[in-house]
Amino acid sequence: MLALLTSVALGGCPIGGEDSGEHGDEVGNDESSETDSDSGRPEDDTDESTDDTDDTGESTSESGEESTTETTESSSEDSESSESSTDTDTSGTDSTDTDTDTDTDTDTDTDTDTTGEPPPCFDESWAGDEFPTFFFFDTTEFDDQVDASCTSAATREWRLRFTAPWAGTFRFRTHGSDFDTVLYAHPGECGEPELACNDNFNGLASRLKLDLEAGETITVTVEGAHAFAEGPGQLKVNEVPANPCWWTNIGPGNLPKTVQGNTGNFEDNFDSACGGFGAPEKLYRFVAPDDGVYRFSTEGSSFDTVLYAWDLAECGEVPPFVCNDDSGFDTDSTLLLDLEQGQKIVVGVDGFGPGDFGPFLLHVEAL
Ligand SMILES: [Ca+2]
Ligand SMILES: [Ca+2]
Ligand SMILES: [Ca+2]
Ligand SMILES: [Ca+2]
Image (cartoon, rainbow, N blue to C red; front, top):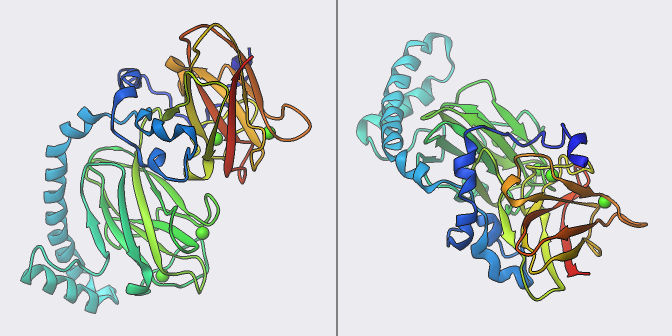
């Protein structure tokens, strides 16, 4: 019933007609050993569901990655040639540019060693085709050469030249860094204007989502959000699938059971008529062991939760068929679902709104 009310419920969820084939493979991914690093994070599912790490409903298409290998190689070549053309173009504008010294350094590096020192516009370059990919760095080892628009701080930064292997939406996040990060991106190498900037997405960590063309190069920069924010950091880059329904199994069997998790380790892709917009969520797949009514509850969670559910085949494709925000006198949520034996659903543990995330408990019992 609620599905009729929720034309806005999936505002963060692209629904594309071409997803169905890829999305339909998710059931087959039950047995995949492929792990999205989200589900592999030790903070997640530290209780019974530890065994379920392999069951992540990763919807990444392996065939898609393989088919783009040639594209990536040609992208790398494009990048090389674009370096050369950049040098030429830039030298032609020196009369109006104050970066003469910088340009000279670039030319020297390129001429003397085509595969060696990167030009000064980035500290690391990536043009691969496997996601997620992680970068680890320490901003204290680098210089302060650029600054972000979304913070007044001028701190040392680490810069990544990133070339998209194919057209898509790519997500960059600094979760796990040891300091208060700010994350921003520029087109090409040292290009202007700034494409996007984010300071605090979850807590002090930053996130950008960017739509890129195949072979498009950008410069992604991580730096501290204030004067003393520096040190070891990490950047995770992932591709956002058209339907990011990534779930972990929670059953069947051994009910009642309680799963621990932390939505702060995840992304905000979904919401419901009951809430969830702007808050990251964790999805679980549940297979009913018998006909009956099952109770899902977030009692004891650390934040204002929302629960919702889809039939497995519709996960992320339509608004959840049921949702709940506050089931009692506090902010915990409860779903009572009448399921048939073998029925597969996906339950989302979400926060009510921006700022509602963190450790949660999901209790599952048969009534
Ligand atoms: Ca800086
Ligand atoms: Ca921050
Ligand atoms: Ca959400
Ligand atoms: Ca609530």
